[in-house]
Image 1 (cartoon, rainbow over the protein chains, first blue to last red):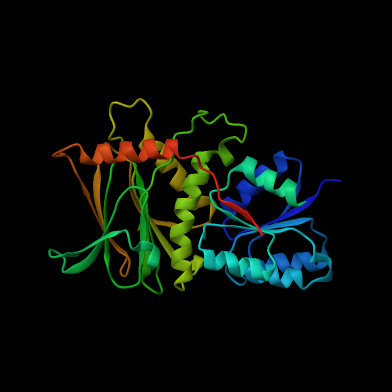
Image 2: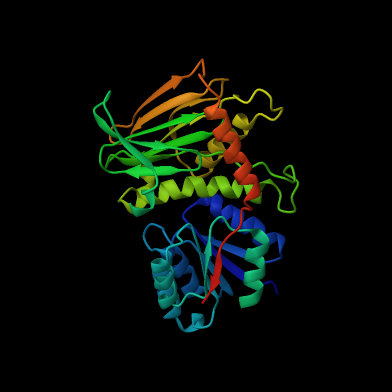
Length: 120
Length: 201
């Protein structure tokens, strides 16, 4: 069965680009528009990998990562941050929260898929 | 914000206001009642502000030409051009949100996209216009005003605190600076692959 990937971003066009990329590679994609929506989904459903934006309303991506890490089913799940932010300080905050990796937008589709394949 | 240190700032005597002047590829966000100025040929600018706070800014960009002519393996939806344009819009919007803006109170005004490079067969301006309109519609934002297309370059002055915008069509250009600057920007974009930095922890 195809791996289920959750794409979290407050931008509809960004979610659509991530979805198009992942679906072409055969992944199953679920979307969430902010961290809280993602966390609520993750509590009830299994997800194999999460790609999340950082700056979002209601709950940002770094908080989402630490909340997910606290759930029993998500200790080892790859959690990737995909963001326009490139500061070392924010990256370190992501790392401390338990993120698997940090990807700076604009993403390259081939690179994104290669990175996912490495961590899945 | 620290990442705006490179943007050219000056005192505009005519309007008695502190001003920031954008070059192609730059953007700027202000909370301090500044004026943002740029000159657009075929590039486009989104002028965006939170109407409750009077905080806003402007970007100035164009899409890279897609070497594959839009026929890359990823199709138009994930083309390098679309990915680049998305980031140009997202950086501006994110900075406004970080300063307390809310998506549902953002006001958008769109300018530029003139067909100014008459020697080129491809209408770069039209391509930029079509991207920015589609982006704003997909994100569910309303457009409060636009001045797009035509054949003239434009000088734009934007006041994010009030939302006022002044657009002057430049019917005569005294030199090639504007066109040359846009050409260089486009060349740089095409040399620079739209790719990301990836770090695994």
